[in-house]
Length: 116
Length: 116
Image 1 (tube, each protein chain N blue to C red):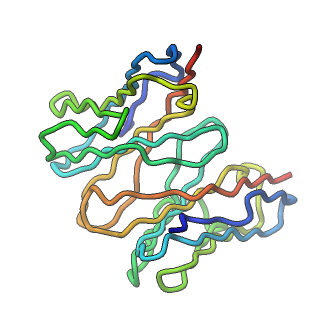
Image 2: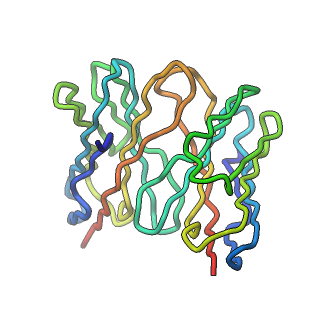
Image 3: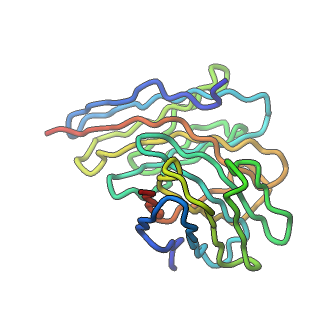
């Protein structure tokens, strides 16, 4: 079973509009972390935002916010006031807290295209 | 401070040859991870190192793949007898290695490997 599911292979948004990128996850752990990364065409993976499973408030970092709905096991990324430079692949990832440093499990990504 | 660096940025090799990919983590980061990203896909975990502990090799796809790390610094990923299916971008990441889910991984620019 997929641990991280991103159902939107591609999304379009107009400049200055907000956009939501979906992510659902599957884990039986109580303690886990959810991450979003941006990958521009240059290929680097840029960390955007983190949400811990015990965090009561949704994470925010500038124009990025994470809509965390624990009961639904969803962690959607919201980008407000989209800019042309936001055009990129976006990956949702999860780290399960096994008590040791461990891998990230990634979704298949969503390609966001910001248009004028 | 410097981020994660990887070399070479691009590597073209012939089928059957061995290749070595290098990663320099962020100074002070004790954990180091290797991932593989095939064209148009998400990231697959390969291996991680945490301090002096035995590495987690659970993601290595075959015994042609191996990796070493010298202390808490440079790591080398070696692929022996390369095959065309090894063509991918190989991404390295590092983190502080804290034993909790929010330990953020920071990625290098990747090495694009092409096997002819």
